[in-house]
Amino acid sequence: ASQFGMDEALEKLGIKKINEGTSTGSNNFSSGEILDSYSPVDGKLIASVKMSTAADYEKVMQSATEAFKTFRLMPAPQRGEIVRQFGEKLRQNKEALGKLVSYEMGKSLQEGYGEVQEMIDICDFAVGLSRQLHGLTMHSERPGHRMYEQYHSLGVVGIISAFNFPVAVWSWNTALAWISGDVCVWKPSEKTPLCGIACQNIIAQVLKENNLPEGISCLVNGDYKIGELLTKDTRIPLISATGSTRMGKIVAKEVAGRLGKSLLELGGNNAIIVTPDADIKMTVIGAVFGAVGTAGQRCTSTRRLIIHESIYDKVKEALVAAYKQLRIGNPLDENNHVGPLIDVHAVEMYANALNKVVAEGGNILVEGGVLSGEGYESGCYVKPAIAEAKNSFEIVQHETFAPVLYLIKYSGEVDNAIELQNGVAQGLSSAIMTNNLREAERFLSVVGSDCGIANVNIGTSGAEIGGAFGGEKETGGGRESGSDAWKIYMRRQTNTINYTANLPLAQGIKFDL
Ligand code: NAD
Image (cartoon, protein in one colour):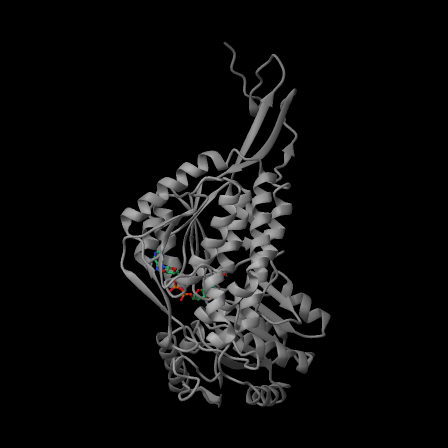
């Protein structure tokens, strides 16, 4: 990896051989065990992180709750200025951080840069938003009364994130939480701890330069056990958790048990419907990028193609031909389309899925397999595969976090395709490829897609920060990023003010003394 300037990137980001995994602003410490981060790109040790202990976590929480007391008093536009400076620092570090994302997580360099760009974009969005944390005013039913609502800072926001967007998901949350006056405690995925350290080093500089209290941005590192400290902690009113549905169900229960709020961004099982009126060329580009981009490890990756029988063979042939062009290899090399999976455990899940689809009666169209030999030493590189399947297969009903695409045939009206598309437990992203207005509008209507994201003539994968991001059903129901997603990071208060010398009661109730 050194040929891609990785050593320089690590140095620029302040990554040492062994890093303190606990941080309260600029104060770094840790007394836990060592977590080694190996790159799925070449299987080599990148660096290590000392994990947090329960005692370390306690120090972090004290620092965060202390910081909240003063940070909430800073006017929102001034908090926006801090987020603006953070965005500037990200611009200066875009290349280095993008490279680290690519090397530690395994996504292509372009996607690594894209992820950092998303962080920059959400900062820009949040800066503007810092002057627009609007509440409504209402007309009171009582004379001489005024009624309005306002949004106040919430407190400490706990962020638990997944490996596949190791930096962007954190900033989607933090940028909005910070302008809201909240402070954040982040537990990144144990599969990508160095990305967490790098982000923390960047924000720590901004906080220091502005003489802001430590604890506005805190970091803890470790596996689910450290995550549990956050979910059980009554000092944390909001837990934002991104990851598998399995994890989300546990977190939801834990947080609901103490009547906290949770924002859940969980697994998807995303489909593209291809109708007889689809543009086949666009369909193939959208489907292939959706299925093999980030080696199928996006929550919005395309898992299912639901194709009308009249064009099924045509689409199938075009896809098989396109898959032949795919180059699999080092994601830092921009000539390659497909990088590695995150680890050998993910490779096992991928292999199991392919066995299972065959066992259930599926037909493999493009063979999968694990690559070995020069350039594939990490054991994490797999061939993107395509299988013909039925929507009812158990394996099709599950999210396999790997480049496996299922082709499913439908006949008759678009409603039949919509029923298949909605016929899974997850509800994140969905798309229809069609030039038929009636089909497109039907798909977007109340009887159409049941997902949080529904697209026409673009694929399922990737989203812009301006819209609210998230999904329904087992995807968890949370919304992050744009639109009015900021509201979850604040508490709403309804205020009624009486400017008369009388005290009339609501609903005309009389109470004479
Ligand atoms: P994961 O569920 O294994 O882990 C996610 C995070 O949860 C990690 O930080 C982990 O340590 C933590 N965690 C696990 N169990 C926990 C518990 N009991 N209490 C507290 N924390 C716990 O997921 P992963 O393999 O890192 O990521 C892949 C999954 O994430 C996929 O299912 C993908 O679809 C999903 N994802 C969803 C979105 C979205 O926005 N909807 C975005 C990215 C990833």
